Image (cartoon, rainbow, N blue to C red; front, side, top):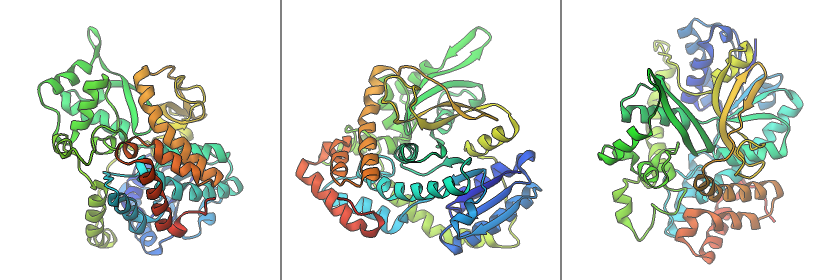
Length: 436
């Protein structure tokens, strides 16, 4: 039976979902689940939840919990990361509040933009330390990486370590389900090919088989747009679809801050027109924090029985396929080793991947439509320079990353950008390594 290590297992709800997915497979029901977190209280809650998940599924795993990361990783076959370096406070709040002083507003700030840059700079060193432990303690491990900024993190890992890594997100399958509801077609009937970079992949094909052949479903999506039926929370993506002809995977609130077109301090009408929720991640965190204590008590209550439903996360399916040989296709974030021809070699791309006993095998997509590749390149520029800063320790690359960020550059001049970077580095203090 495999040993599956959860790093950041104090993310109790996400850990619960993944454990439920894994243990619902009979072939994995006796696996060793090793839970690690630096917060002993949250770790204890997750350990209680793990036993409840096993009970609900009539599974019999070996469940371990430890604050010692090396012990958790020792001999692991699979490691799953779900950490947040610096947490909501102080670091996420810092990522939002200091840019606001310059008039720079954000929605999520975990992938790109000045918030994504800073999140990457404080996260990459921790992930690389983790990978060095893996190289020593479990060199053949498959590392399932769920932490944002996904592309920056995975790119740095692929450059600096030998660990087999795939970055996992739920935006591809999640958006497919949303579009299925919009067009009134059961998602089970839909086939798609989706490729690009994390949070900026596009459905190159979105179709279903019929008695007469294959039906292209894009005309149905276009009909939703033309009839004014786009959901109020998804107006940014439908507008991008109108202009580019392909539908993007990540949510409207995310996508609004990856481009220079929607969030402008002197255009409040755009915020209203496209229903853009500024400071959305802050709001979500506050709601979650306010409800956590009640949720924790409920999860720990001996009388509470958990209802376990399969999530749409890819992680458990990857483990199941690698253990049993059952083939399945997922969308994973991997190095661009000739997979997308008109994106830079070595950058992190999100492409279909076949998974079986041979592991995660990315599928070559060839060339993307040129305008989609050009849009992605604006984000890859920022990712590349952030990774360069993290791996070389050169402060100049942080400035360069911020200068080339589409949203930041649309709002601030060069002097403001450099001053903002200085302020953020100072505010982060020991959460960042020293840069020279």
